[in-house]
Image 1 (tube, rainbow, N blue to C red):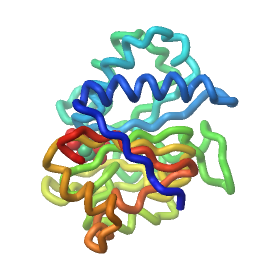
Image 2: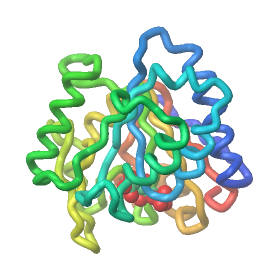
Image 3: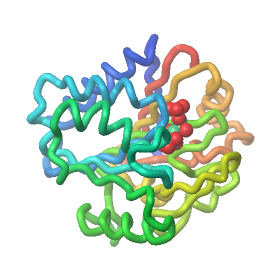
Image 4: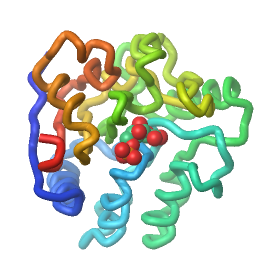
Length: 236
Ligand code: 6PG
């Protein structure tokens, strides 16, 4: 497995700007369009979504299809909906074409939605050895080491032979639809965005390949290209 690369920034604003710059460069090197990008929820990527809506060349984004790494099983207007924030911060402010946006239906029966979303992904993405290949997957990391909605008590979702699974938040018991580790790890490029002192210990245990890190889903993520970790100084 290719060694991950770690890039440290002073603030989360700097991370958002750096990721936009990275994305612009990356898009200019892509040979096949559309590009399929899976985005995570949570708070970290919000600044990036907002700055992405102000991209100097919005036409660059026309060749992107946005998917969700995971979504809470709630209505799209719910305060915990990952889609809601992306809609408010990006879609609405850029009048982005709805055909290129692929939200999870949070009010569908979870098992049915996991099956449906997987089918939508399979029909839209190019495949390698029958698996759909995302061009880019943006991940966050929780302060328990989870990523996507793969939690430490559900490590089996890392190696599921499904594209999507129903996950359950260990504390709130909220059900979520998540990409499996299998699909995430087949992506061409995974980027982690991790900020905040509350993640420093776990981040360094993962970075240093400590045995204790084996319990964290984020420690089991890789991609075809070396995983990039965009972190802030509080994590380092
Ligand atoms: C979600 C995310 C989740 C998130 C981490 C980090 O739906 O909550 O996909 O995996 O990336 O929990 O969240 P923060 O960015 O808020 O720290």
